[in-house]
Length: 452
Image (cartoon, rainbow, N blue to C red; front, top):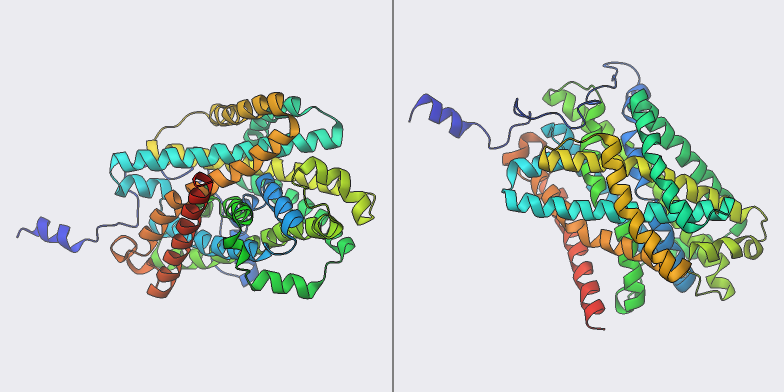
């Protein structure tokens, strides 16, 4: 065997660094944010804080509102366990996505392109694009509804106006990635504050909430209607395109691209995303709890539309500004989700296809595809059709999850690909269990849907 052949055999199949001919993920902001090499732990954590909050946006976007409202109004606190379970899944999967991005200097889409054959990559790309369109569909509907509730703009007009958000993202990106993160965090604070007030007024029973959150009910799987909403909650919470997004934006930090530097970066990035997703858990649980207190406990079990919730919330909670707070949080949620959907679309297209198009063109294309069905459904079926479309979009998201989760878990658990950064066997087993749960729930939903 020649020296060259021996070197080829000795070298791991996966190399941490990108080949020279591959561009870094989001190259215009890659390694653009300074990280202090020394100092107190809080300064280092603060330097890494941002990507986790951007990822958390996807876990409290308008799609969550529809599924959480329907779940709380119909079934009370029962589905709180599903929210808790899906959030724990999200914490694990986002930590794995951050690990992949930092350890390999590739995002998930680039990793798939480097490892899988072209036909598989094509399928994965199409599945992810469908997930982004479904997410964008929820954002269009949610933002349009919020504009209607707050300013009286018709749904169709509000849906068309959402196309303008492409310019907002461009403006923020041009000022620097930290400005984008600051915008996201500011809107998250607004959402958090709105629901903190509503939870305080609703004063739900703490014991019942804790029991429902940590003790599952067999009815969740046995009742097809409850399962449908539960799948929607998982789809709305564990967002497939968020895994691609997180694996990319963690690389915006200028940490040392050495094994020690990467290991340190993984620790802080995981801490950042875990804290941010706990905030998302509070918001998602709050939506369901407020719906349970205001609607389920008062006999309004049929409330599933955001417009209905807006009209009934203030009188049922006894707080005059409750409905306004609800709509303001919805608008902030829709605007926030715009940022992450835009970035995820860019990451996926560049990673799978190595195709770069201007951000404004990419954004308008994706948003245009989402606006058309909203306008058509609103014109034909009115607000009720729009509400059903919103819930359906979250089920579509859930159906795309395996196409992102399985490659991610496969990569990070493989020592040949990750080297010393591969996850321990116990964590890998847990990750595969999460993937299996997602697959089983999806197959169960498909069976119930087509079996009638």
